Length: 306
Image (tube, rainbow, N blue to C red):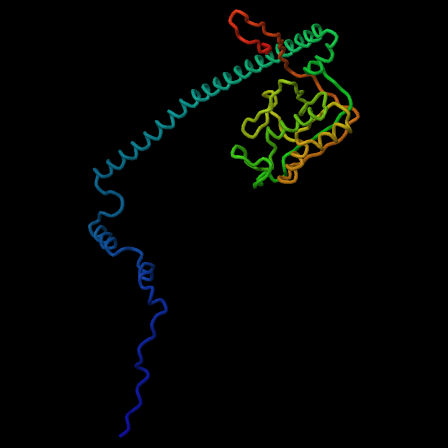
């Protein structure tokens, strides 16, 4: 006897696509927890849901609202009272800053005037007591402005100052980058003097035998005056000979190595006439031979005193 075919209508229902996310489905379909729902139902049944119904509860709510309004009102009143005081103190502070700034500017102007007066007196002293070589002494000391043929040397930082690596400046004290350093300018100036320059100035700052080129962070100082790149060096002398001698010198080759290693930009050109100002401040010193002390038996070293 043959078996009847199975009833396909009684097949189990297909599973829901989101059956694996039953927790998320429950949270989305029943956002309110059952405990909160039961508590809300009890309050509705007891009549305690919504605004307070008893007189005591209403008075408490009213008192809370009045207290909150009082606190806000007092805060606004205090802020309104304190605002003029703060504004007045701010104005007084601004006035003090402006007054001190004006005083500092006046003192700086006085210092500049005194510095110029001292410089003029020192120049006159050099010219009066220099004898037949007064002009030469004034020239070498930077006491007078000069003009004549010479060269113009421009040294500037590389366009990309974050380069690194070995090179002529490799040391533990300086980072090897494409930025011009104070000792680079020292070598440039010394090379120009050695090549026959009669007078030298950097960015309009006249150099003397006592000038100092130092660094303050990344800035270069000449006689404590900060300079900014590009550094334009003007030197008085025979332009062609001076340029050739400098480029052939060790310092000129050092500058060329900086250009090749770090892309520091340099250019040198002959000038028919350059004008250099006088040094802004001079230090006049005289030296005399030291007398031999025969009584103490000390040897005469022949050194002078300044």
